[in-house]
Image (tube, rainbow, N blue to C red):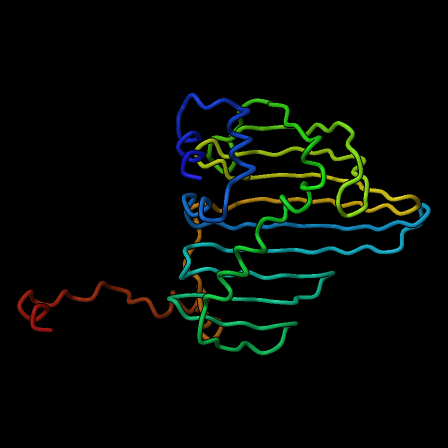
Length: 247
């Protein structure tokens, strides 16, 4: 991993090296982006003899500051299944929209975050041996230099799940400094006889280095109107230096 990041940080990095590095990025690499929001929307459809039998939409939202200040939520078909808030090392959790509960240890949720974030790899994994990336040039995303790629796919045989990867198409924008995926959109199709699975995935990183601090669930934020009322009309007189030192 150290070699990958060192390679990416060079100005002369080739588009092929950059996209290869993005395939190996771990969550720790996203820390170098600074505070940001990360959202993944995944839609799964299952067909039997061309008849839609199941459709499900999952949304993962992450607000990231540091390992002592982050939040994430998981939503399935419009219903919240899990929300976690960690701030100043303290942790709160609630499930299915219930009551917030303070938890004694944030570490299990740090582990869970590391496991949940990389939906892209889980979707593309069955297609990897036939997947390639075609450079579309450099673009600015969220004020950062990125490289734009189109996905290309050549036919491969049945994978370990018993499904045959038939088609995958989409595009991805990779941060040139960190190899982190900033924006992506893919659609994949796998089949087995009369059964077909279609997965659509959208991911985005936004508000990079523009987020305010995370607030604990039992510490509501004051409205802008109330903050204006409470703000003194004139600046308070500064205490004498000697008094400030004593305090």
